[in-house]
Length: 90
Image 1 (cartoon, rainbow, N blue to C red):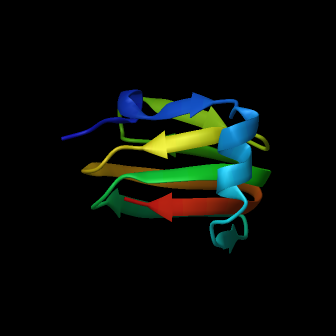
Image 2 (image 1 turned 45 degrees about the horizontal axis):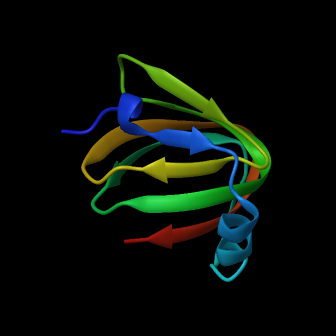
């Protein structure tokens, strides 16, 4: 089972940022919800602030962050500022 310690948060290279622009956009208002990743997700936050926790640890990310969520991660999303992100599964 993956944990939030397996989440990668980094600033994307110019090439990675260009690739992300071709992906769909997902928006979410401030909220808290549980989520289970059945496959890897890569996303680029355009705006918003998020804390993801697994009950033991947590990770924060915001605008400009490239975030890679591992498969088999069960977590809780705490969206403190409305999110807009490009995302890709697989």
